[in-house]
Length: 293
Image 1 (tube, rainbow, N blue to C red):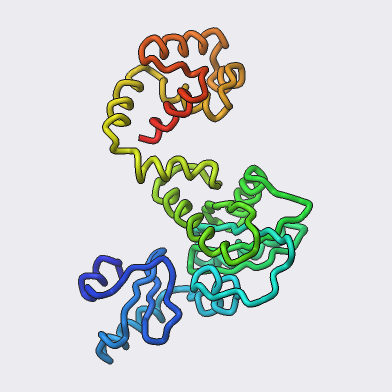
Image 2 (image 1 turned 180 degrees about the vertical axis):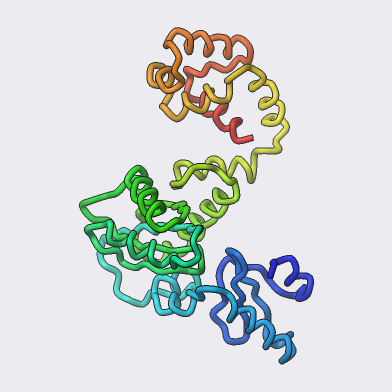
């Protein structure tokens, strides 16, 4: 059933990112959200019907996820009572999975993912039909975004899935990690809503877009600058690739299949037209932000 239909029937319901671990509430997984209702506001008939919806939802992973300390800690706010390992740093990898073959459980993808790493993870679990969490401790061998991209592409081919991953930062394993995860989760949710072709996300390729959208995108200075800057042919592409390559003219020209002198001429014309010098990193960063519009 669609979320909007349920909300029209139960206007007092709340839509949350995670279920409520409280017997006084009923949490129903719908898409990537949880519809939460107070049981005291429900009749016995309504409760029975809603329980049927829950029973019909394929792959109820929350019950099994509840057995994981890291699920209860990250999603339900349960305090961590174990003695922390001195100096331990962990990162949380969020995985979004879209299956193209319902006969293959997404749990198979997650199990295979674990086997691709020599060092065991602290924890792995499915949150729902298409969300998984991996908790990794910092060891000698560190995998980067390119490693994760290669692994996920290989597994997607094997299990007929499309995966997108958010690779978290390594944080101290203390009481601050729950809030840090919550913020990383917001970034990942935001990126998934963009329908981008990118597959691997992290703080470095997410946070600028997130705060630009939330705080800057409707600023009159931004709106006016955007319309002024990108009237030139290939200006947005030039700015994007130049920024992604640290302002390096030679590498950017090669990736754009241009002669170096041609790219330099474009940069010169861009400055003459807009006043922004793309050889200056402050100007380049500002122009790059405008490409998010």
